[in-house]
Image (cartoon, rainbow, N blue to C red):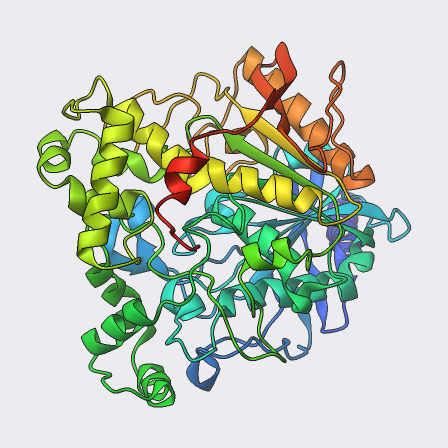
Length: 547
């Protein structure tokens, strides 16, 4: 009897302790209560994850193709233990014709150090991440799991936003950018709630890679985002990149609508018709806009709006920079030396196709497929080929020159313009990092070939985050060093607005003149360099491609 009593007391005490521990992971927000769970960081440190917190009403039914609405309060305790993915084609998962994810996807995730008890008095710096994926795919689960950053004392937030046509359809009628407005609403949620997790709402740094980096940078240009962030770290993507912003997507939007039986000239009628279609149908219909997976890179994305009250972008980012109409906040930019691997790798091995149909593929690879008549595009294609390749056929041996052309046009030249223009647009500093280091790991690219293209697009992701599509779960000794250097750089930037690296004098971009940047060759070799330009501006400017 005594034994049974002792066992009963032990079990009862264990249950009580478990509930008490769970209560320590309970956070009461304005909209309702959420309960997190413990996880372990890359270096074995405990942190607490709150995954799947709704920040908007589900964007379904009549709320499809509309600005996001704040979430309605809920009753009871929300078990925040589920990651979400917005509806998209399975381009990156080997299912290019299938739709994955859900239309009801406007959820965010919050991660905090420790976990025994949430300390609301810590006031930690907040890093707010926007995932990449060409505005067409991706998710926090795919690209920004926080295992590495949670070895540092910050609050980390990742968010979903609507993708593809559901997030960026645009009939040239002044509406659109729903995906960017989702991000803004998530930033507003942070301002209202992050203090409950021990975060400092007055120290929010937006980060992102590729389309996530471009998204982060675009918040500098939107009146909707003013006061919601204080710094930005943009990796391999800025608002001036030609794939990151278009005047409109009316052509693609109408083609998609026609594929779904929605035909007409009045945008309001087209929206009404498309709201009656199944979201999976809409997503699958995007296939008609691709010549190959990722070509064009972003069939839908950020565009101009003319609604001056609720428009996210009402002027082009370049014109706003030239007019110095931009948020005055520190900007840290990072790019890889071979950014053109995306979308260049799609054409690897297609030598006959490239040589025989260069005038078809060059505009798609180099982001001028939407400009001018065919004759003008053919002339541009010929001049580009002559400049980079001369009269040589494209082969495996010189494919790096095609990658270089894509790097110049799609990333470096517009990145350089961004750094120089933004540096002189305000008092805040701009910093530029050029990475020529990706470690040993090379993902098998979308063509199926395991090819070393150098420091390619996105290959620095593994130093900051984990994710199902990043691939590298463990790092070698040199990669570990690089991870620690870059994480410390990010954390000091998030705290002070200055990226600090031990033993390196990381200088800002000058307010005028040449470009200064930190060149990273490996963890032991980093130095400031100065160049007039990262590529042939005269060539590309001669084509008058107004981005």
